[in-house]
Image (cartoon, rainbow, N blue to C red; front, side, top):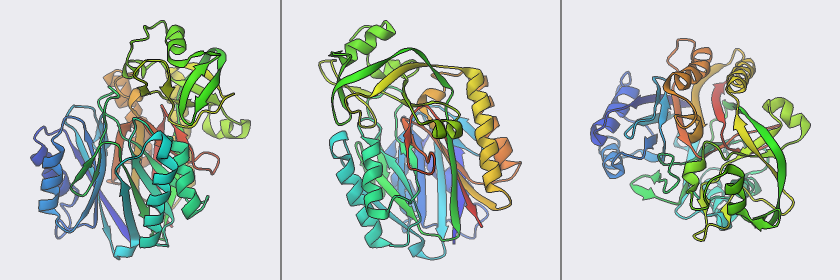
Length: 400
């Protein structure tokens, strides 16, 4: 049986921050021993110091993690340049989880790399019943990564997690595996505790504006032309921005909507799943989507609607609580889009959003919580594995 413990801090000294998180998370335990340590860090920390100190304190523990624009713990959110959060996991049996990683996942090889990681998981443990993924957020075809995992572990395996980010600049993000610091990598964590079940959901608050436009030339997740014109200049004209604009500067305003089926829209609370752009080519002509975008894909520009955001979040949390029912809630993982942090919301609004999530779910208890502001979210929709952007995605682990 897996047991979870969490803590977060805004301490700026990296060595002291990771020590504090580990000691606080496990303070009521007889020792600091745990089997798996998950670390979320904002971009300003010294990652070598964090991983080294974690190894010193927990020499037998497998360490995984990634960077984001901020973290969320049961203590609340922190988007400081040096914020840190951990989830420590103890296993009664080592066979209750497995971990694999790769050091180079890109749009063109997302299927192959995810497929191999899933094979590595399966070789270590063939009883995995859910998979968490932490992957590079700069250039990944997330739908192909999902397909790569499913082709090994089956289409019914729930996949959750997110893609790493930086401080909203869309330049570099990092992933961790033991003492390794990866820049374009990915980590898979397979859970094999038969008593655990995943209850999850995603929601965003954007609505479409204007008329749709159509992808007319693409290759994989790279979009070359929209409506017969160079893709990036076309989009910048729509936004009234110069072509020289870095995609990191457009995160708050360039959410691209892709229409979904009516039955999924009812569950989602929205007719559109959103896509975020974090990479363009060196000539500023084409851009990269986080999923494959075949010719004929129709896209809408969208804008944030604050009331829709809060209403949708309340509906999402209510649905999760209903699905959890009387079962024991043992841990909550959480991925929030970087754009839903301070890029879109002032401090008061952001703290209110976090309260709308945590107060109904935690109900004053000390349930472990680990969240991050990343570039994208892997969350089930209509019972199928799906990749999203600009959402709040909640992953509640419950025990029957």
